[in-house]
Image 1 (cartoon, rainbow, N blue to C red):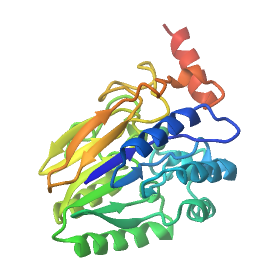
Image 2: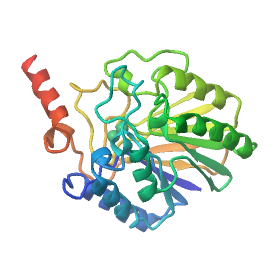
Image 3: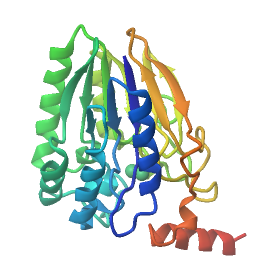
Length: 288
Ligand SMILES: [Fe+2]
Ligand SMILES: [Fe+2]
């Protein structure tokens, strides 16, 4: 039962810097097959402000020859206010959520794959204070109870923690990297009382695989680009690629994959993608 977990595709029709890597992965999946494909979010380059980016990402996902689902990321529908402690430039709103559902379907979902139940959530909602945030929590508690005793793979755009579930992350940029402290504690509480055996996340653009308290935590790399060390500390493998997760047993077997047909893009080589990141690089270069 092979799950292909890919993430952070950052697709756009009018700024198609990362589309060729997605095509390469679609071709690879067509060749070898899989039971299921999940995209861990940031499907689009700038979804909060471009309906066309989300629509284009959806059209490209329709080329996949294997059934698939996706969870939304910050570059799909914006950020919760509480994440950075200051008002986000692109806040998550009900209008942006509706756009996601129009193109990609439900924001939270369950999917049976072999003996497993995958549970996808909208991590961007957590800490937002929108009425839908509590609605999702209630749904999640019910979904985890309903899945028992099947092993559950939880899919969230944001990772939960760096060193471990009880340690507050403090490295450079940590406040924007993980679930905010309060939703993290609440989610860890739900996980502890459930059959969750795998938590798979995107957003970090680095691959990592750790295990805590009987749960495997897997960070997908991006299919699109990595960030340079000046902008993001090394937390795992800084590579473009995707992850194979074998769900044959209730202990997932995890392997990072790279393809020679995918380009190892560095975001600062694409100033047209995220101008603020290119500017940050210029500042860090000036600072030595
Ligand atoms: Fe991303
Ligand atoms: Fe992200």
